[in-house]
Image (cartoon, rainbow over all chains, first blue to last red; front, side, top):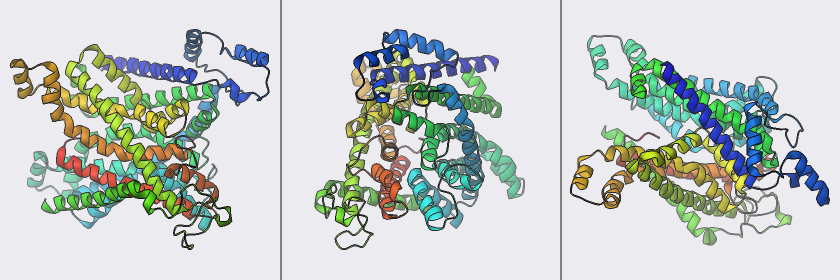
Length: 308
Length: 275
């Protein structure tokens, strides 16, 4: 278990490092951010001086070496726009993203897992039919359009909810619905198919033959055994929430990492882009690592497979 | 069991209907659209749906919304189709080679896939797009660069298992060349998975393109793309709901149709596949 853990940590570090390297070279090869931040009528001498100061005149490999050296100390340079430490800027926004993601994730699982279980247990019933129709629609409706329509209905027409920003609990309602909508459908479908699969197992037949109450069969024997795929998906989806956050935060002017990343990309504020890539890929891989460990704990068989 | 199969079948037919509708609209947009989608008419700006001559109303520049929505199908399906083609061929081929020959190139390829997968798809495509630049061609490049991994992974996995089957071993024993074994025996057996992944990815690409254009990258105005139309509609949400409602509904119905066809294909061709 310890060897497995260590190799996974090393893998995580490698993945984050490679992601940063790829983005660094793509960014440097794509154009000159300096031109965007200086007035049009600037003298060539001043331009060169500015470049010199920011180190854009050095060979690419020297710049890369400096970048890696800095990144190892958590230093991604200064934001070209805000004139502040880029990583600090990103980390400052992280709690807002995590809060929104956490609430949305809780909402997703509170709704989707019971819906999936009911659909499977009452297969073919009206509930199953409604649930499955809901997931088909949920998967097709793009989150950003749902967001716009919610704003129109609840803010413009009814005036019940604020259009965006942070503040009280009312500010959470629409962003959470939109963010949860990205995943609730998939979690419901997977829960349903996982529970259905487990219900076909012989030990469920045995439990029923023993005359156990249906609720015990479902609650004790089925759910525990259906949990693994659901936990796996939970981990993957938690990471994908970061992707959904980009869109959700932009629509609702939520001051999180996603919105900051979009703005940094629009402004070609590359230190912030790199710091955001670092933070997001690290968070994402750490979440997956956490899920793998949880997985190994839930199902000891996977431990041996991965060790072999 | 029969009831379930019929219902699935029914949904597949619904999906086929919406997908065909989108394809027909995309192909016939120049004949179906009542107006030029980019022709402005400032005197007739922000007219509500039902205005004579403009069944879905007009936008802030007086452009006919119906025409723009119809042409939007063209842009969306073109981008989706090109991206699926590029990713299926490139990702499929790489997965095929990685699975069949293995060795360090295969391992290296899978590491690259791991790196890509350590980043949410939409954010990856968005970052690549911001770097390579805007426009129709670049959004296809960005989505392809972000999306090929899924094929490579699925195909490699399939090839690894197909490789062990008796008929592949028999072909090798009979002295059939490696290239012929790969394309004559292995490829036909992994083709269903490629088709299923492609159909499921198709709507994902269309929605991702719209999302990226919505965020201000990707396809730029005045090209009538659903995503950039929705982006522009945000400024007029208080006065013109139709600008947000119709392009989004068209996008949702197209995605719905293609998803249902994808589910159907998966149930028929490859019921075990879970993506």
